[in-house]
Length: 136
Image (cartoon, rainbow, N blue to C red):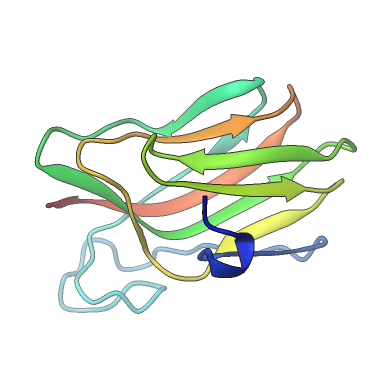
């Protein structure tokens, strides 16, 4: 498992991060992350079940999820271990009380793999993810 130092994730105490997607349907422009022509989607919610929580369902064979921006926020007063994974690659982070993580570079998941968030306890973890489904 990669260390946090080597991962595309970084964290901090409580500063909000806003993920915007102002040009997802305009292939002639770049989106908020500067990804030219990327037709991205945004999903947001709260995962609160111990164990695996599916954040983005698996695409069909021959396609993969590429995460361009990700924000996790521990909304509880309990430190929680969070493992983002596609069951081949995984990133592990301990979110302290009200701690957060953001993605700092694109993460290309494996073929036909869902993005899941495994929680060490039934604590509320808010998330916002900007992603695209891309052919392999």
